[in-house]
Length: 219
Image (cartoon, rainbow, N blue to C red; front, side, top):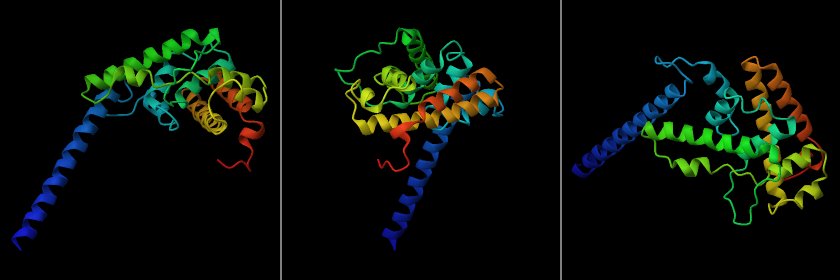
């Protein structure tokens, strides 16, 4: 009986500890959302927050910040899609990975990393466990040229020769990217940005074609 009582007491303490950890984590996350202005001081969801609700395929905070910073506004359709591919492709970088050849994306990619660093620092200030450099460097650019070529109408066999990535990896990334494009199209619509909505919608249509999206393809 005594051992059972001790066991119940131990279980109670474990539950209390877990509850405290979850409460602290939730408090930190709310602090991040307030500082990034996704919610107000009372916790009421704001315009940024409503936009972020449309995104689930990748880091919704980063995507939303990029949209509100206007980081897609001056990009061509193909470049906007290629930039979004960096958020989908988070595989660990290899020494053989080369920087994208597309010069038009040199500045946008740098801005992406700067935005990611700013978000990570806000998280860090809110006492969340995060490595700023690791978070900002997690977004991989090695499929940028592949995505641009695909949007330009290249064959699947051609884009596979442009990357060391496995065929299955390329297909999964393109499919997830198309899903993300549907989400950011809705996000742009939610804030009334017609031009950005059209850009993302057109990008999705360019991406969704051929063997990559064949219904009979098993991955």
